[in-house]
Length: 384
Image 1 (cartoon, rainbow, N blue to C red):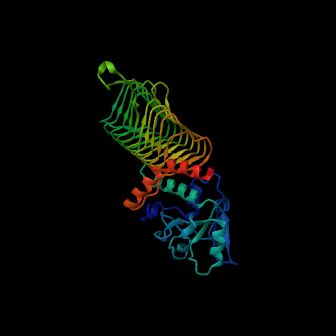
Image 2 (image 1 turned 30 degrees about the vertical axis):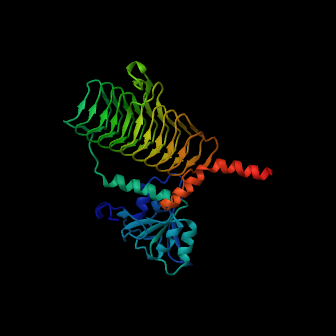
Image 3 (image 1 turned 120 degrees about the horizontal axis):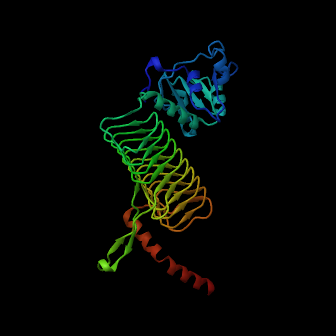
């Protein structure tokens, strides 16, 4: 991976770790082999010279994988299957668990990389990646682009950036520290909380409310009409009459919404996305759905109307959920699974029929169609 910062802006390793959000993480930096291990925690590094403690600090310009990181980058090991790559890494520092750090110190074939010892390497990597992502982006001044259209009664708080061709309609509010990328539309009466990032061409219809620190990617649409129609024979045989969608959309804090994901407004009550929910690209969330806090949903999932999903659930790619269902907290749905009834107990649920060579699949499918008949015959034989 290419380095992310030029040399002049690259911090020393201890300074980098001191700048990153390490809340809840205990860290120390180690160097040396067994019998000569030198280590210091971040508090020591901040109070004294790391070099004087015998642990010289390299400058860190970026972050990469074990295989690709160079001598000015930091890397990490979180998956044991990649442990064999440790011996060949060229990184200046590697984030490892205490057990792996001990094994590295005892192995003379390990590289000279400093060891950042942390019980949760993947979480520390995630926070480092956030730091580098922010550091590589230029600081943009608060401004409203000349080509933006902002209603006279819209409220634009301090430190807001509104890009070209944005439209902010009547009564909308954009809170402090928020950025609207080019071409965003904020509908009448909608609100965007503080420190949000809406990338290009995000559309919020009217009565959509987003909490703090949201990230919404390009092409997402929040608040479109739900798929609500009533049979109306007065219009003709098989005709449908539209049900006006009178609710809105409410999105909690710290939510991320992927590109081209759609969240429909409620028919009477709001569609609700809880705090900390993470939504991938091209997800369809229908009207009146409620998603609990910290649930994560992968790409191409479809959720039909009025389904309630609990907290801390995961729904893998291309799963389909029928309407008016309830999923308990801590439910994990495998990719491609069709959920057609409520799930009341936590656990992992899978309903994917395995693929096979087409002819074999047809033969197996034919047997499955006869399962109920075969079951009756088997029971009759058992009675005899």
